[in-house]
Amino acid sequence: MTSFFEMGGYAWYVWMAYGAVAAAVVAETFALRRRGHRALATARMMREAGGDADMDAIDSGGAR
Amino acid sequence: MIVNWFRYASPVSFYPLAGRLARGFGALAAVFAAIGLWIGLVAAPTDATQGDAYRIIFIHVPAAWMAMIVYVAMALWSAVALGLNARLSAMMAQALAPTGALMAALALWSGAFWGRPTWGTYWAWDARMTSTLILLFLYLGVIALRQAIDDPRRADRACAVLALVGVVNVPIIYFSVQWWNTLHQGSSISLTAAPKMAMLMLAGLLVMTAAAWCYCIAASLTRVRAIIVERERGSGWVASLIDIGTSP
Image 1: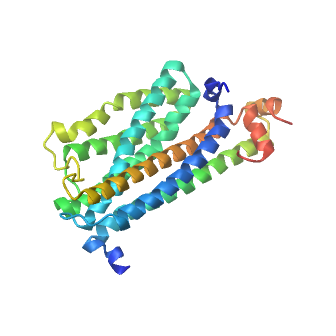
Image 2 (image 1 turned 60 degrees about the vertical axis):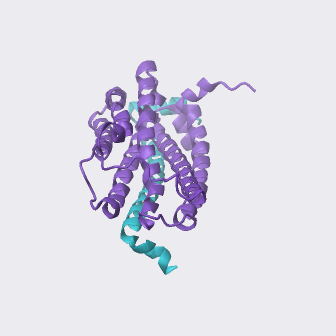
Image 3 (image 1 turned 135 degrees about the horizontal axis):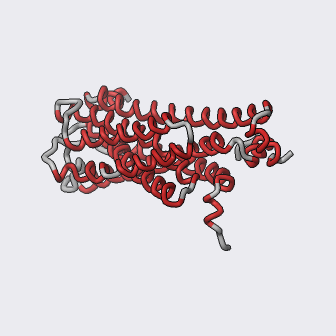
């Protein structure tokens, strides 16, 4: 197992490369999830706040 | 069954479809990555000349390929958006840029950590590396240009023009190792080595490439869903989406 992490003496290079990819994939996945939730939350807030021109469009076209 | 594909040109019908596709491709990406990482880091034997440093190939090459492919996809959606004035196509182009930029950055980063043990340097102003760095700057330019323009429809057109002009860089990257004398090698997979070894390395590379494809598709579709809600939140259908309280 130790020899696996040593990567034949190239551990620094191999794990810096793989680590960056892993960090990037995790970071983008979380950022995307947050952006999606935030987009829906903002739309909901705008709808509840009401008042501006956009709200009229929502109210006339909404399901309620 | 007759499917009316033009139905999906509308954000309303595309939104739920994108959600289902994103989940499917995300799951596929995880499966391919698990298999590919096992082949690349465990099953594939140590390279005779490069030692275990060569294992960076399994992430470097897929990332570099996706950086170019995502750019071409972004340029194609931009062309459709400009030609047909289609807003969903512009949103797709917008959704692809950050993932493409990430792939370009990862290709450069993993390349640096592969270059150091094999060439003795993290960076050289070699044709392929320089053109890939320009690709990253093009992605960042498209993203920054969008941030700089308040009106989304005007931003769509400006970004589409920039994306289309920049696509000339993709063949330059691709052919750079043939057109110029570069430090960057053409291919690291030796087909003259023992067949089983070459086969395992090639298999690992192909599976990791499949994982990268699926990941980029899943990430872009997830981002386009957020973009659709951000840009269409004044419309009735987004309001009904909120009323249901879910994001199907």
